[in-house]
Length: 539
Image 1 (cartoon, rainbow, N blue to C red):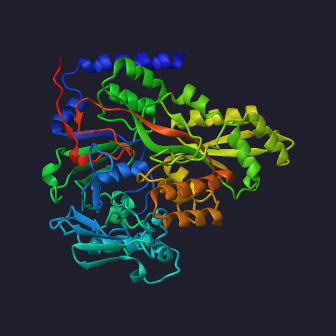
Image 2 (image 1 turned 60 degrees about the vertical axis):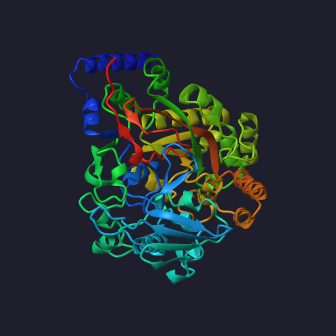
Image 3 (image 1 turned 120 degrees about the vertical axis):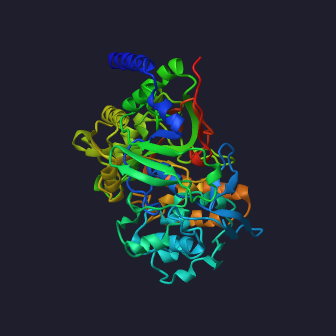
């Protein structure tokens, strides 16, 4: 409490100090029509076919554009992006997209179907080892090509009859394909530029460095100063440049949420990435017009490395799960309206996840005994998490609960973002904090990733029965029957507990009143082309 009081005094003092200045940074950038955004940390990369995170997506969405784009305020509405129109057959297994006739890259070169075909072949090429290649598995033959079963890309169900017509053949009925094309894994990349700096599968190809990168989105990369800022400016070659109201966006890698909140209160940011729990009540009282608390299609969970000897026993994994009181973490740490996750997939439409995740420390203790662990104090584990202050606080809560309820000692290892991702991908951990934000509004966005070999699985777990049920669901035409089959798949996943769902996300952040066109969206993918800045007149 003393720490919080000091923080609030500091925030108040800084706010009063700022009010005495002639012009605040936010006022200056609002006049310049430059949006200033907190974005947590340095991105792993800006190549849409390499990255896997929200932090990277926030920037990439300004630089690139898929066939369709989000509506700024209406869920499920698809607007023209790199495609001006699209159509499908009756069962949604075949789709045709017509590209914008005046679509261009930010260097002035035309965007053609050759760029899309190149992008899809690149992300699916086995040697390229894209972690997110499975997002394209809906295309006929894509999975076989990515896994090296087929060596010929012509077997993949995407073709271009001409420079502006793109046709897809899908392995099942996919009515939500327009939603998929909004995801960065489906974006084109500039074939001419990638090949200028290497071949298709060159690792760390410098085409996406700040001095080289070109995109097809509403903005283009101007500067990338490591641990300082990424600045993107309005792209004059963008096909819909007349709609874009901003002149630029500054993405700031502010890791510490208290620092980020202070910057907002000090009029240095238009939008924060998040909001520290202690700041939610303060913001409700002092900045109610700026506080946003919105539903967010995502789940926070722990991954368990099932290849580690200590975690191979399902009873141990279930004991770790049953000994965590998620409601206590929500009430005492998060305080942002999150919901306890009793399954992995958040309820959506008719889909209801199996109600199997509970807090039961007595059963947890018994399961540990059944697993043959008679001396829990000698059963050591490590918990990998990021270097954010909020991550440490939550990790310590897990640590305390495992110690109290099971007698297990868990060492916390905090690492900066890139190292954290690398260690998780290489299964260099026992337990790791994580989460998943839906890529599109369908349960499969939470379920497909746990297939064996998927680049986002990162647990070492796989189950043929699970994958067979998912495959069966794909072939079901009746929507309700399909949903029931997907629920069956999730039950299999959670019965073996390679992950421990904790809570379903909400999005808590601060938005300056000068920002317009920024509306609540379930996936939080705000299309920057519709955002504008309006100077707020003093009362």
